[in-house]
Image (cartoon, rainbow, N blue to C red; front, side, top):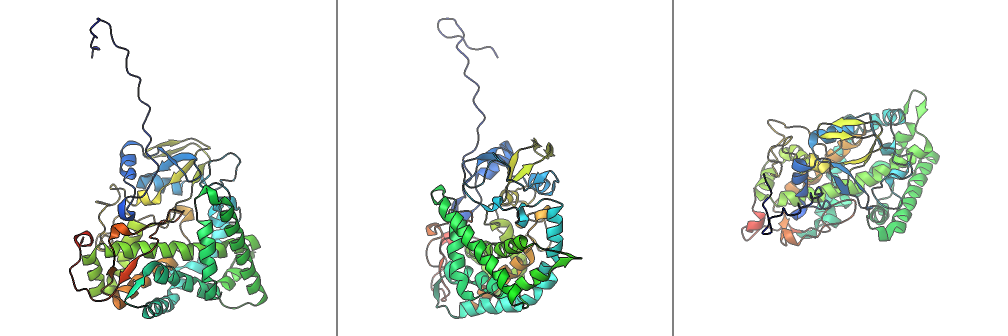
Length: 428
């Protein structure tokens, strides 16, 4: 097209070509829903950079097929300890520890995981189900009709479970809270607190291992000490890191998913009522909770060791990239109408498997334990507190802003309702 002349008969100076638009920092949508930015990125920039809590910008994979390909690729490394690489958080973080299973690549990772995998199979975890259910019921039975669900239930249940499994005093729960709160902050103003929380937590885990060596028993730590592949056993550093990871993931991550999942169910009272009428639906409902509201924690970045082709584009060797599991679980190419919360989604015609527990070699080793805890936590609520509902508006719920996203508090009542649900909470 010919440029229009100005009144003096000369062509105007052409407008400069605009810079490519890079989306705003990823922030959750209303009521803890996925960021609206994910949809734009999937359409216009599926590997666009995003800002990490450290301030570093790295490509973020948001499409389901890209995330799965990235997590399964042998060129996707968890060794982020090379100098000058982008960081997820400033200061000390989980990425810095070479003994952590999540930070290892084959062949070290293969060996480490092979030794541990028998400890966390469904067959090993299933015998814990009655005890987990009993803990959930006991916690609810001591509460009044009105209570605060996050502190009084969602946090305490996995804390009690992991304490029993590891053979540590339940009174240590308060220390777990203090350390995880410090360690999971993203604020650069509290880097020293995060370092102290991490150091104290690791020292505690090391002492637990030492105690079980001195006085062996039959707890999970004892099983890990005995775990071996032929003559190969976990090193002391690997054992300590495993205990640390079990407490962190088995406590805060599971607690956050319970809180988020119950909140989501209470926003859909007809689906809550279905679970009340048929608690056997709880296990499949948990899969939708995991897809819609999991994982509550940020994913782990990967370093590309060789030029790698993904379905949406190529990543050059040396690139550090963030696979976003939550975005992948809301990709309409993988899950039709992904913004619709539906406890029947995985019942009759299962869609693609969600990636709430990751994918590939680093898929969560304790996924079976998390599923049992989530299922029994929700089953106890629908059977013992069938009239459960929020006492305030969903919009008034405050959310955490650290590495884990969950409601700060959920004030609820289980007294029989005297009025119909508000329009805000009456969604199906």
